[in-house]
Image (cartoon, rainbow, N blue to C red):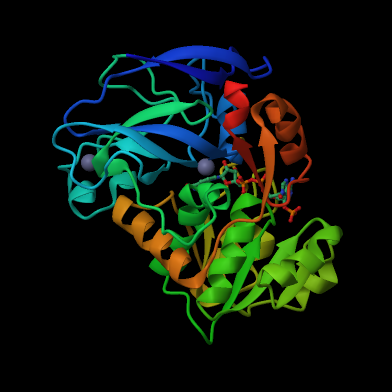
Amino acid sequence: MKRTHAYSAASATAPLAHFTLDRRDPLPNDVQIEILYCGVCHSDIHQARNEWQNTIYPCVPGHEIVGRVTAVGSHVTKFKVGDTAAVGCMVDSCRICPSCAAGNEQLCDQFPIFTYNGPDKHSGGVTYGGYSDAIVVDEAFVLRVPENLDLAATAPLLCAGITTYSPLRQWGVKAGQKVGIVGLGGLGHMGLKFAHAFGAHTVLFTTSPGKAEDAKRLGADEVVLSKNADEMNAHASSFDFILDAVSADHDINAYLNLLKADGAVVLVGAPEKPLAVAAFPLLMKRRRLAGSLIGGIAETQEMLDFCGEHNITSDIEMIPIQKINEAYDRVLKSDVKYRFVIDMASLKG
Ligand code: NAP
Ligand code: ZN
Ligand code: ZN
């Protein structure tokens, strides 16, 4: 067992605070990782505050993990001590259902084992995430980091990166298409970078006028203030694809109306409350509304390799873990540019 320092939420209303836990000794297929950096995803906040009504306490969030390998089990072939390694939202899955067999572990029929708040089949308890100084994960769920990328700015790729890369790829976004990204937060800023890299004409929808300049720097060809009805109407029935990365309640019908015939709005945002969907915006023009959850392990490696080739990372604000509660408050005010990353050295101090 390895004594591990962490930050956890003790209840839905408690601020995160120091916590210790034990990580298992590496089993034959396990990689033990010293965590260097962990991104702060809005899902961490939804989960810590029980907004999805399934949180088990104490809860140690964090699923955008980059670190260094400190030990490997006897059967491990992909990693050796000293390598950099990364872990995203999943640490295991059934591995035999049709979804797992197809490389879509995130869609596992038995439910993927999430990096935190999942059933830990080794301890019999719950999984604890990356707001901690070490983690032990089966090598099948550990990713390789391209050598040219900054490690701290790579951490958010493990969730915000794959969650936006995957739907843009699955829906075949490419040059010649008009693509919208809704919400300029952690996911949204990666969505802009990928849509731009895939060659699409990319439009950011935001509620924050102050983010327009950044959006253009990040890859937007146009910026639309979603609260301005005239600006929205000017884009009616013109989009091939819109990725909705909003964390709170909002009017989804306004975006359905911007799709051309057979266009799709894909939800990646996971607001606490159900969204109200009107029938007519869908019926008219045979529009589609779908959802997408992170991406599979092979696709996550493909995304990281793509980022290595195109020199893509996140725009981050680094924080010591002691500032995590302030960071949560700022994320809730849409005041993050554009992902907080915890420097885990602060946990040792
Ligand atoms: P984030 O950094 O907080 O960004 C969310 C953005 O949504 C904000 O920056 C803001 O952008 C916009 N927004 C916030 N409140 C709004 C409101 N009331 N009305 C309209 N727009 C609003 O969050 P994130 O980490 O990117 O995560 C976004 C959502 O995706 C969360 O719900 C998270 O749980 C979910 N998520 C899903 C997956 C998946 O696999 N599907 C993976 C990771 C995260 P503007 O200031 O530009 O308006
Ligand atoms: Zn996440
Ligand atoms: Zn499965």
